[in-house]
Image (cartoon, rainbow, N blue to C red; front, side, top):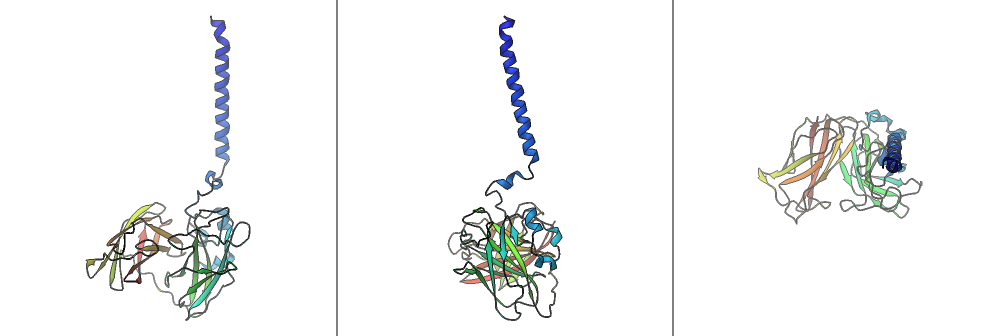
Length: 309
């Protein structure tokens, strides 16, 4: 009886040993990978720069403070995963409107021509001076030769950073959000303006904007924005870029970029007074927030400083 069961026992033991060996090999293979998500398309939806992207940043960025402490997803590189922001414009004239021309190339070195629509636009462009003044949010146009042009309002002298935010609709980075940037100098006598103290309330065009929430660096946290006018709740916000408000943030010292995503659903021309956002600010310190909203066909921009612990 016992002799007849021994072959079965041996087979089961061998099978168990084989399974354990295979599992050990699989775990060893996983442990040897630097970043398992890097090989999976679409996993980098937060536009977080890789180490190689940071290392190959344009030399023109060296005049911006904080470049050796770049946080994930801050947009402070002109290159990410083979995508590159290129421009021959390194200086723009002060005191009058200027056109900034640029091209986005892909991993194959060719200009990217297909972009997904994000908040009703294929390309979002932001300009900010090194002291976090002069904020401009523009939607550039692309010519037949794949060159984009951002028509900027008057620029004050100083160091500026130009950001582009886009999502390729084809190629290796299809469906992945990217934020890239380059610096531009505006010749002239630059007067640095001190950053306003942290304050969760700001006034603009007769409107008062109040931010509620205590975001922590590197963690997603909800923010609530309330819009009032003359002490009364505003309920006539109009859709702007497929939402009731657009919120962008820049970090003091290095101008790191963060886009805070709205979560309030659009329902006609009667948005407000409360608007919800998901905030993920990568580093601690002061951030300058720019809230854009529209009433009566007019766009308003309110700015305030938020301290992040």
